[in-house]
Amino acid sequence: MRLIILGAGGYGRTVADVAAQTGQFHEISFLDDNSVSPDVIGKCAEFERFRDSQTAFYPAFGNNEGRLKWLYRLREAGCAVPTIIHPTAYVSPTAQVEPGAVILPHAIVNSNCVVKSGCIVNCGAIVDHGCVLEEGVHICLGAVVKAENRIPRCMKIEAGEVIKNRAWPL
Image (tube, rainbow, N blue to C red):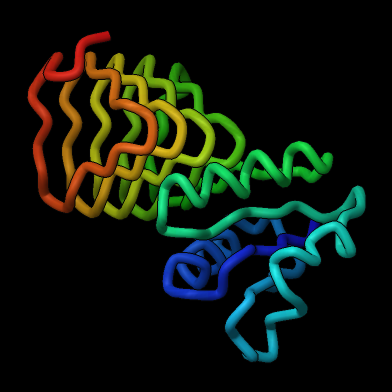
């Protein structure tokens, strides 16, 4: 399968690196409105030109709302959107990770969690048991979301932050 990442900035390059390490994709390229790098094959709005049964798309924008907007647009156009999980991440077999979510190196998604579309669980972050990350949430580097929290849509938990048990009750 080929992966086309919308956005060739820092987050897009991170997604490409993680996607390559999964072994799921034989080719990875970018669409970007501002970059002229050799692996940028067009502008973001041209994504439909590349749509086929062997291509998946991921909107790699750090802005949570912007990422979700593109995720919805890709889905409405019938594009495949993958779930990307780094091989060193731990995701419990009882956790549910929706398409369009990215789990980065050494992150932990514990038992009975739900990670909805467009979420980022960044390097070394921990999402403890029974948590729900609503769409577009970003759990930054090394942040900890303790048990039984429902993190609201598009919220960003900053690097190193610790969210107490049930601070955002289910």
